[in-house]
Amino acid sequence: MDRQRISRLAHAHHPIAAPLADGSVARLLERALGGRETGRVLDLGCGEGAWLLRALTARPGWRAVGVDVDEAALTRARESATALGVARRIGLHHRDAREFTDREPFDLVLCVGATHAFGGLLPTLAAARKLLAPGGRLMIGEGFWEREPSRAALDGLGAEPADFADLATTTDRILADGWTPVYGHVSTDREWDDYEFSWTGSLAEWALDHPEHPDAAAAREAADRHREGWLHGYRGTLGFVTQLLRRD
Image 1 (cartoon, helix red, strand yellow):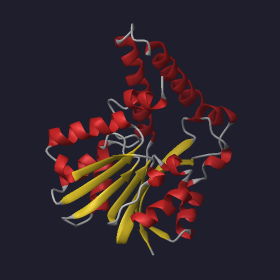
Image 2 (cartoon, one colour; image 1 turned 90 degrees about the horizontal axis):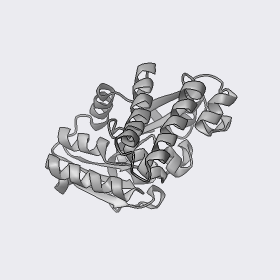
Image 3 (tube, one colour; image 1 turned 135 degrees about the vertical axis):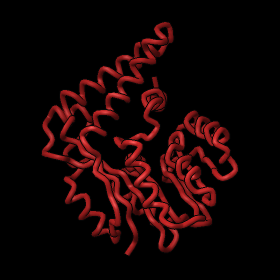
């Protein structure tokens, strides 16, 4: 069972692919869109387009572009855009986000929970810089260590200590790269637990509802493995911060 299909099933009831509650998403988007009634927003690693669809619904004068390597997720994004009546204001591209270019810069660039697509935080900042209009904003969501990771936490994530830093160091690296945080949100324990229970539960439930499907056993195994890694490993160790940035 490929990773993209696992992710789609796991996010069936939590379309924002990050530990963020609906209220947090709404506040972040409101700050990111600012007082502008028109503009262009880009999501690098958009998945099913949850951020973009919310932005377009909130601001009828905005247009959106999404980029992702999961073609099935983009198909769902198109279907959702049509159902919401915003299909004419969104363009979706099936390609590696690292290869995306556009002749017209964007007023807002999003990359929340997808910095791995670029190889980490700093390469993501570099990529976004090339796509952002003067005075534009970048909203980036990144993991950080709440505490020194144990071996169990690292094994649960399939990570190494250098993959993340603590929150202060993460923010210092952003500042040193010429960006200024103008807003932010650190995901709460409740948001994390809701996200992880939704992720593992949605995947496990799909397996229970489709016992004859050839992928059922693999889906259940993936859910069980993820739950084990979370509850016996990185719960309380891995944090997540979403920051709204501007260039100096």
